[in-house]
Image (tube, rainbow, N blue to C red; front, side, top):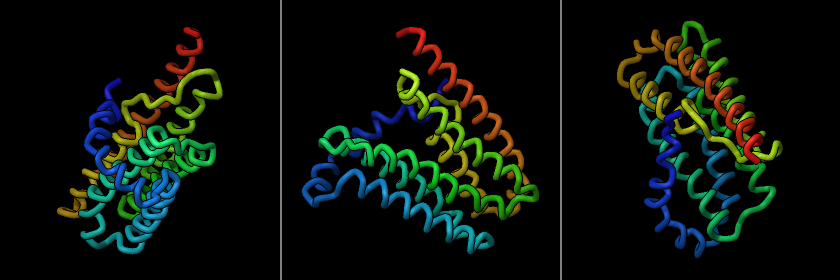
Length: 202
């Protein structure tokens, strides 16, 4: 199904000129992965400590874009500059789910029914778990949509911007997180089906 993830190759092309500079500075893929995760935890802490202030929510879309860029950069450093490692693979997957939880759970502080945000974050973790099952079952790592990591960043970033501009939009939070949770459940199904189909084709 359609997903913003399909634009990844074009996004990487825009970032590629930065790689040589990072390599010359001694920056590794694992440095970038850890930096993105720690920055996400710090930003999530800011959101959790200041949920009633507009600025953290207004800047969240910018931070999510930067996080997406860092995620693309660490992958390119690993693949294109001989930095692939088992540790890097672990850090990459763990960093994604930890960052998602840190950045999206603070939304629960603004919702009349915070359970929707908790459910959505739980399903976000499940989508990545199902996706990473692929290699262990003889298939590829799956990134199928319609609500993968990039899609979540777009939806929740847009909602954060709306919250920063108009705090009363929090009353729609149940719908935003409820619908995204339903789409993530579908994402899990799509990824599982793709893994099974890939296994049949082998």
